[in-house]
Amino acid sequence: MRRDDIRNIAIIAHVDHGKTTLVDALLRQSGQFRESQLVGECILDSNDLERERGITILAKNISVTYQGVKINIIDTPGHADFGGEVERVLRMADGALILVDAFEGPRPQTRFVLTKALEVGLKPIVVVNKVDRPDCRPEDVLLETLHLMDELGADNALEIPYIFASGRSGFASHDPEERGGTIQPLLDLVVNEIPGPVADPDGPFQVMVTTLVWSEYVGRIAVGRIMSGSVVPGQRVAVIDRDGQQTNGVVEGVELFDKLGRVKADRAGAGDIVALVGLPGAEIGDTVCDPAQPVPLPRIEVDEPTLSMVFTINSSPLSGQSGKFLTSRHLRDRLQRELESNVALRVSEADGRDAFKVSGRGLLHLSILIETMRREGYELSVGKPEVIRKQIDGKWHEPFELLEIDVPSGDVGSVMELVTARRGQLIEMQAGSGTHTHLQFSIPARGLIGLRTRLLNATRGEAVIHHRFDAYKVLDGELPRRKNGVLVSQVAGKSTGYALWKLQERAELFVGPGEDVYEGMIVGENSRENDLVVNPVREKKLTNVRAAGSDDNIMLEPPREMTLERALEYIEADEYVEVTPTAIRLRKIWLTENERKRNVRKTG
Image 1 (tube, one colour):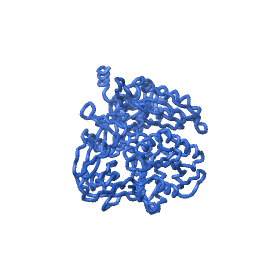
Image 2 (cartoon, one colour):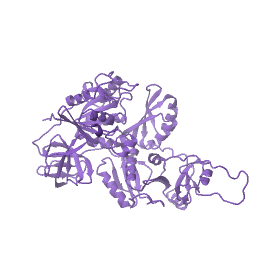
Image 3 (cartoon, rainbow, N blue to C red):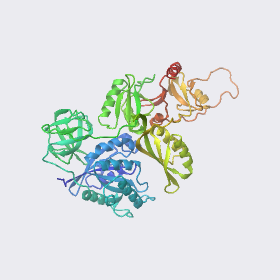
Image 4 (cartoon, one colour):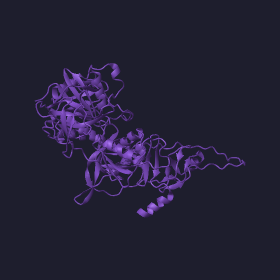
């Protein structure tokens, strides 16, 4: 039987197509909140990183009530690197709102999330969002989306319900020309078209853990949708892990999602999305069930990581000045804790006791983890990102990605040159909207490392770049290395304006005057391809003799700002990014020049 009093929906789309803004409109017009409860925009982007970057990183659960029906809404990330978040929460839903930008149309992540939604049998509703854009083309975008659904094997693609909306302006309509009204037509469509959850209230209790929440007061909270049966506080349950091992426990508390939070409940039944308190050993993918009938549900399967890097302790002379967690034990415990909720992450011991190989979906996936750890007070060193290769039928294969670029027509040549130099092959080229051209490439994943910055520089920031994982293909040839060498400090101390003034004639600097440097730290980029050992702390010799023109004005150019992503893209295999709560520095793995020479002889 199906429950008519609940609708469980996920909102999925490509990055920046307006998922969280649409949720804002649903919350504001639901009539369940005071104005003071909904402050600002992107209400569900609750952590600092999400607000700073303007993207959703973690999936969120909320609920609103409309015409007596409780609608559980799951807001999901739009970036391909956080696909693991999407894959693990889709099983809680019965339907999905597929958001598509009324100008951009379906993008790479749209295809990815659609594929995952159709795999688990969700009922889709197409929402053509941002129809109040002056350059929108809503009807063309709708046809493109329905065609994509048909291509992906959706049943009766032309009969899939759709609606036109603007999350920012807060209206939805079946008329693409409408530019006003409320969001109510979308809520009506959800209630009428999305089926209620299949419920077996009399069956044995079963729930799949899809999310873990941590509370300082009660510890770990397991979140999932009840597939059958019911649960009450104090009920005895069994937790079945990935190896089929059964652990018995007691549910200390039952909570249901209500508005922006959770409320305690005396009972939760089949079809409800529930939070269970008191199961410290539960992991994502585990089944919580009746110990008398312990039947596990099929585990969540997520795509494998494609990129890895080495995390190790910060061994620089400046370590320990700003961080609280410095040792390999701290690092190991933090990474193990991340594995509990980040299903797309993999961690293993690397060479040496103090190093760990951390694998994820992409550079953004791993850099968000590093940035989070940095803000929590961790200090660490991170190595060059490397793609994960596989041996298939006796041949080495590597991950390839589909790269889509919208670029001004005058810059097509520069873009083609940059991408093809990194083993990219042009698949499709077509005239886009206005003066832009749409290019689609197949490119090795390692070719994407550092490419975004170069493309944006070549197009003066006008290129729009998206990519998604395609498949593993036979290993391609070598890629060009970084063209320029680096300036490496040979001494420790504070950098001086006089020394940097002399160095900037032959290099672009990464540090300014008065900054702490140490032997082996990278202080700039050489104008030639070789590394250069320099003295950035040298001071001007002072004498009591003065001559005309000897006191030149020191004019320093601003140093290049190295963000975490830029630093990870920039480094080579013999370099680390040193990450602390207050600084991001580049360094050589071997700090002294003698160690570097000895290591070159040993490896080469």
